[in-house]
Length: 102
Image (cartoon, rainbow, N blue to C red):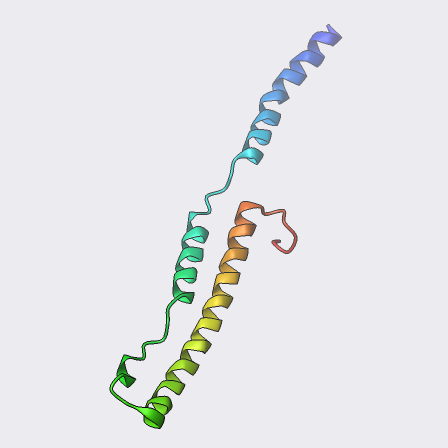
């Protein structure tokens, strides 16, 4: 009788243990983070639009292009930082136990 009670107890808690193990194997939905990484990567690849300086020549053209290029460098740097943040968020979504994710 004691053995039957032990088996009944084991079988009673076995489905709960199995469900917990199954939930741990299930991967989280990281599609939002993946989309953010793709958008940030695309934004980082945009180049400066120098078409407004196309008609100019010499020093005038250089003076026209310089601020546009400087702004593009700043924007690219900011976009690369966003890419790094988005990649970290995606990595943490895929593996929440990873160092620095909690």
